[in-house]
Image (cartoon, rainbow, N blue to C red; front, side):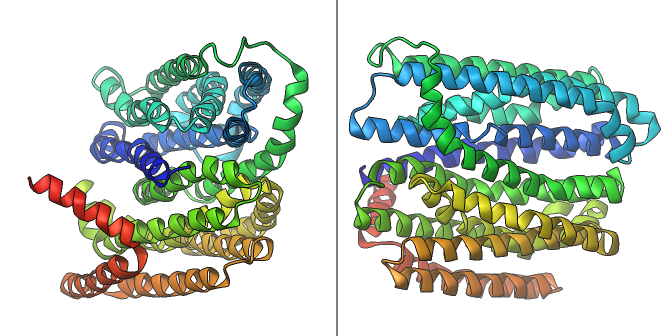
Length: 493
């Protein structure tokens, strides 16, 4: 696989995951003002359910990416149509069962789990029931995106992902002038997800074309998918629970208003995860296509992914740490900023460690060792739940942010330790990772402690200036520097 393919794939994924940030920046303040804090907290809960559903595809999305990329690399493409059709039908059946379970549990979730005001309980119950309708389309659509990415068609996958993610925030704005009822807002979101699934299906048929034969339901083709997807599913399910457990803990232990103060900075800070997600998404088919015996190429991909992530994530995290208060005040208001600034800073520090963990995670998926990632996540889940249970009642939403960040660093540490045992060929690379993780975390943590705007600005100039020099000399290869210089030169012409 050419160097440019990974770079182009990363850029497409970055656009696909990053474009909705602009929509969120515009939409969230307007939605909060239009709905009020309590209703927005319920809508944030609905977004969390949709986000978790997108990850609960039984591991089929990434499994299909790995299998399709591997089959294309070896020329075994005759049954790809049938493979995709069989996987989609099986996944649709499982998704319908999940939708029925969510619809059945809607009343209990509103009444017994979350502290939703009785004035909004009816809306919340109906909205959650309506969300259940979207689950088959969300889950199957995500798996079909995996097929496109297995063909390295990141342009097509993001042609769906960009509008789909942006409309998640823009649909409420379009409906608010007509109604503040959450049922109508969620109904609009469900309609968008259905259209997204239709678009994914059409693009997969276009990519597969006639070259891979006709698609038929062949149960025997599920075996390789299930063998790989089983552990991916376990890892993905546990990871989804981990990612959204903080929100459910706040909703259960605190209030919907506290959830709004937490989710708002989380929605923005977590969007920085588009960077490692973009790089990791492009690397998965790359790792899969060379996993049979090209250690030098594997090491090249591994190192390149880490360099790109550090180069892009650290400055972004530092800007959040230093200027979260000012940014939130301009974006939403001074009162909201007072309750959310520290949360944003803590999450930004944790995001740095969480971003580095993406490369060993995708490496394990690519070489067919998703079982190791799943075991790590299974080990983390109970410890994280206990940490949330201890910190949220005592520290509030800031305690949830602290628990999330601590878990992110432990996750990164464990994933790199496992990769080192599995693939110890380049010991120096793991030493560099440890140094980057400790140094970056220390620099970000110091930024959190600075009170005055002037001190934060001066600190940011010094740290980011030093990082720019380090990044140019150490993180960019001669080839990268030459390509960047040429791009700048062409823009100046």
